[in-house]
Image (cartoon, rainbow, N blue to C red):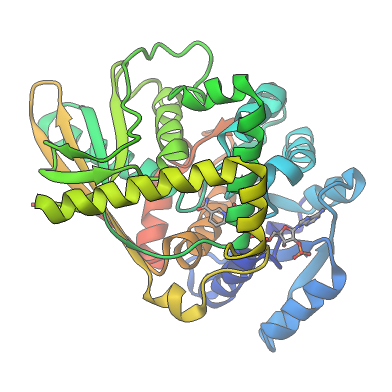
Length: 409
Ligand SMILES: NC(=O)c1ccc[n+]([C@@H]2O[C@H](COP(=O)([O-])OP(=O)(O)OC[C@H]3O[C@@H](n4cnc5c(N)ncnc54)[C@H](OP(=O)(O)O)[C@@H]3O)[C@@H](O)[C@H]2O)c1
């Protein structure tokens, strides 16, 4: 019998602290409040976090575990129904915890956006998870919940309206305000570093179906937008969206994990909407050139070192409270069925996407996995947010976490 519904591993990270505050404020108002504890490698930092949280924080239980200490990780797993981890870069620190969870049958969710690491974990631990009953759900933050549930929701609306699924969905970021943290930058830099020296990894990253089960039937060519172009679907200039690299892979895995429910020839891509006319064209051009330049600089060791040492945020740093509060996002899903019926849906979130909103999404994902998703209904394995939790998670996100899903009239 586990002691806690949820254990937050990495509670003292930048995003972990945001999540813990949210859990403290919001969980008592839930219809059924999960029991939870905080965990991390440093007892002193966990105590400091409890002090920051004030009187209520004092009653929180703490668990000390290092990401590399198997014994401590196993002991932590014994105490939890779900471990939710913010200890990243996951490609550097995440594997021992996945191993401990799949071995003990403990459920797990996280914030990774690192496709190379997810692919490695699938290869090494999917079978063990299927046997032990452990449900692993990666990507429970801004990447990739709004995209994954946005597509699921759009398909549901299309089925209800036209009795047909959408064969094509194009997600366009209409508006977004936020900034990156040191942890996210470290994860990105590590991925670029791995990819520069590994040809197979570069090939894997270019495959839109890289996270799908091996026997998947998908063959449709998917667009991988690299430069600015005018988009007929949205009548707007578009530019590459950096999160598309993980979100599109998660959406295709969701399709596969739901028995190819979106169709064998389902097409999906993501981009930033930059507006019409010459102004839109110029903004799209500037953004894609800037992004390209950033990637080239990140791939070269001297410029990467310089960027890390100068303007990029360090681990533990991120957007201020004011920036988190003023942040938001508005994502549009332009969809079309095979017979030509069209529908547009939108997903919005309050707070900045990467932290204020991500902290809330991750907390609700953990609560949903612990309390709403029956072990007999969703068996052990590597799931996606949509294939594991869809409707109950969407309900939670709208009720508690500031997200909205709707059809655009
Ligand atoms: N998917 C999304 O939308 C999204 C959004 C935000 C962040 N993220 C990801 O979430 C992760 C965290 O981001 P962040 O900005 O919050 O990072 P951060 O502030 O740098 O925190 C990293 C955490 O890892 C812990 N850690 C490092 N080594 C450890 C070890 N050996 N044992 C135990 N704990 C260890 C650190 O512990 P201490 O506190 O003791 O130093 C810290 O709590 C990153 O991988 C980032 O890419 C994803």
